[in-house]
Length: 166
Picture 1 (tube, rainbow, N blue to C red):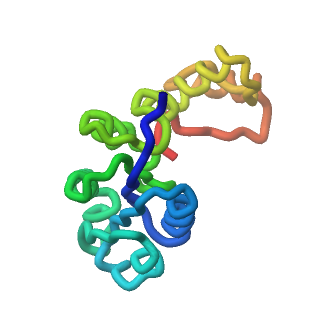
Picture 2: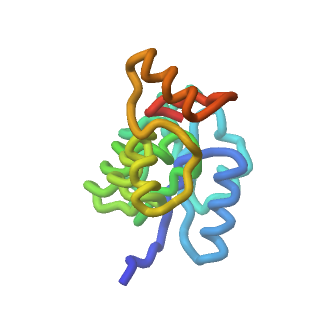
């Protein structure tokens, strides 16, 4: 049986934070907003049940700072962290930290995020699951001649995608 959530720390800002606050309100869940100094007068700060400043305006020191967000979550004794999108939503290390701390990460498990972050692995998983994919290579291409062969097989125009990253 899934664990019932009494409180969620929202580790994001702006419109997405507002949507999560609204959903928490509708579900009877206490919303705790983690915000940066730049957002101290924002609407999400005003509407959340609780708001905790996690650092300066630069996102790397606030919204992307594992320690600041986890510190806020632990100090507020929340049941879950909702990353919204962007920032830490696709960060397997952060999801793993939540798991280690016994806090529900609202999103995929850390191992799933890691697999989907590797585009070659994600493509293999999609193939194994029978999900249709566009024509392309079956793995990493590091040789220019191999790249040209695959390009000719696939056809043009050609999209080249890094195996990791956004």
